[in-house]
Length: 113
Picture 1 (tube, rainbow, N blue to C red):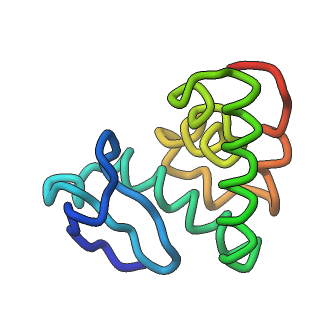
Picture 2 (spheres, rainbow, N blue to C red):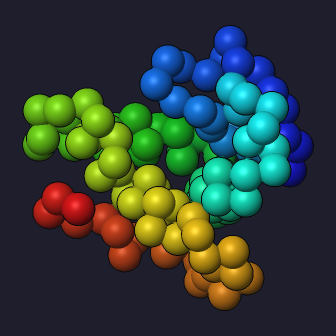
């Protein structure tokens, strides 16, 4: 895992993103933000499980489905199964030590969170 500040690569409205094996962030101070880094580390684990490229294909397709479902970009983003897992566990700093494979399946439902 490599933490890289690359504020011009991060889309407006977002603070960072994981692209295996990198965590890209808009702000230098997020390097020491345990919750932010843990959230992105969860995404790195998801990407590794799905062999990276399929993760991004699924992520985009699920976002489009959620966008049709909710008709709201922010709500669609927050309800992507990968994001639901990461947001639900970002403050549990031991989560990745105990996490079973493919845990995001537990967050793949059509109901809103």
